[in-house]
Figure 1: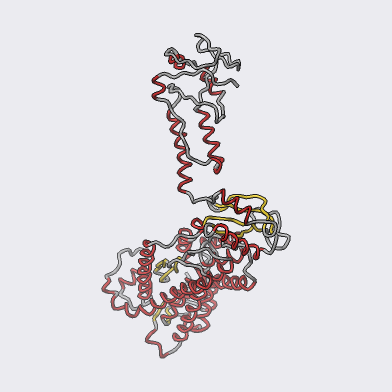
Figure 2 (figure 1 turned 90 degrees about the vertical axis):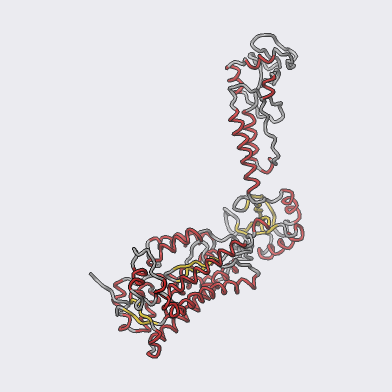
Length: 548
């Protein structure tokens, strides 16, 4: 390589000289950006060497004299030397770009060097800086060294190497060998971390990624991840979120009342019936026509809302003893069922997988318990002659929407009642039916639904992926949920498709009885959402099946 010897700049060149950008960035934290910067900086380096290129430190410019001492020309004649650099020297410059960061940099404003390239390089660097500023705050490298020296050791966990941890590689994952019972080691490390760093970081115990085998002590090999507390913990609920939740609750009240009015379809005016039954009906009927039916619709609306509130109370009662914070519920209105349930977020990190399963199952179990009670009482009142004045007539084909509930209704009301065109039932039957259907939908093992969270906690994230694919397939084919399969599938894809974040202790198993309870619950969910096919409905007498 020849050395940089003789270069000169005119007044015009000095005025339009392009300086390399001064970047206040820690390249030790981002090797990729460092290489990008060096490569872009090397493109801007102009190396002035002689046409002979003997490597002796001498250079000739257009054969108009030589400078054997290697000094830069300072007279005005040197201005024209650089301006008349030939294409051969330009090609030689491109072939001999140096990557040395310590060599002097000189940049000419020759027309062949595009200022657009320099602007693009500056934009690249600024983009990296912007991504660094907008992204989550990373773990301080100095803290990593302190934690390795003071937190881990031969008696707890022997660190072998570190890897990035988190969705955006904002944390550190320590991989190594466990030196004790994992639960005891994790508790000890958490206590020591708070003593060393205070409340600055959260420590996670997770399964070692790409592990070659199980731990010699039994169970999977574990690693310990560390994230900043403000990065790993969910953000608090804002004022706008409270406003949105309140508006959604008002809409859910309206949809529940509308469901109560629709349940009286045999007594509604024809134009109102057309609005509820004709898919092509767009304009709503005169609201004055619905006022006489509001009072009789309130009991059903109260039942639907009561199931949803009971569902959320179940979540909060299970979360409170474990010091887990939950967000305000965002109710999802739906005319067919009154409500699709509610979106409730975790506002603190779950301590372990047992807490995830218990909190997730508490809501659907509570809602299903109240719904089952209303459904059972409603069926008993429907067969009681003294309650005839409170009954409403509904098409018998509605009982074909659920295999489990249809069979229970058939066993209670009898063949003669269920095989007619219309069936007289108590409003509590409708409220219980809608509540059980909503609870079953929320227990589907997919995404961030209650069922998805429970499956992730009981069987792991890998199992949730398999359950989720099967659930999406059944919903897409219309096997589960009947006419509600498509809107529910779209709702899950838009709002609830992301799995829940890991717990602090994301390794310890939940126990056999929790897995068994979850398995039974999913089986009942399938029976509830599976419609009754026509042949079975005709044989059992569930609804009047019309054949053409």
